[in-house]
Length: 154
Image (cartoon, rainbow, N blue to C red):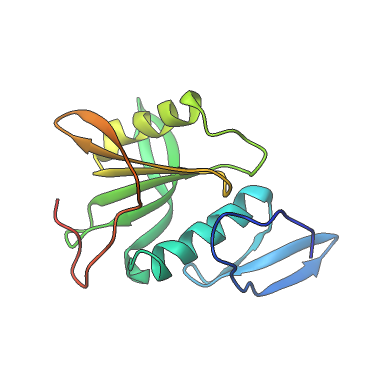
């Protein structure tokens, strides 16, 4: 497998194979093989952490969530939905070498202007930022949200 940096997430186990000089990893949420890119490396770790570290139910995690932004189709990397299948947490993943800066935050905020999730998570696997939307303002959180058996309250 191609060498990727150790991330600031707990280690995970990936089912991987080599095909045509590319490394593929199994996405057990979507039931398909994906090319292992640096961004996908981060996404696999984030999803595992949302499940094991935050208690998000696997069936509530949606990858490549569609966002219609000014008539242009976009996608949010990962969205965790609530009991009513509405976005609760919007996650934007970048490759480890991409800085999490104001441009990444602006991208997530644009997506969230449509989705209206309560939380934003921005990560490149090395740095993680979480924001809570309250009264139209984003407040930085010290930790990712924790999910109960039902779902955190809106």
